[in-house]
Length: 172
Image (cartoon, rainbow, N blue to C red; front, side, top):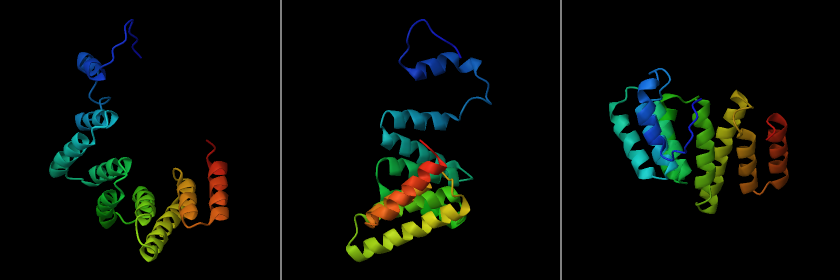
């Protein structure tokens, strides 16, 4: 790691100065860097515009759909994020990452629905989380996300049990 006697606040400047020193294999794609910089500055419209521009050119659209979905989740645009993950689901119905994100989006969109529709959305969320758990019970924080679902269903004891299970599997 290089160290500097002075602090340089603009990482983009450092990137430009040392670009010739970085091999292509170590360098993340320019798009990834631009999107990350936009997200760090909370410039979500720019990040979305960059991803959608790349989407038009990409042969494999799934990674970009994931990024667009996660970008919308970061902004709590649950309905919109679900749309991106629906596209992934059409192509890869057993993708564990998609199942996880769909479970979260279903749970969060359910909060804004009328009682009957809310119950249906929470049930859908539960189905997604069960599929994740059945595929890989250690996937990210799936038990914690499942616990949040149980809390929303007002099943507090079950929620606490799931959180305890999560902590046992992956202590913080």
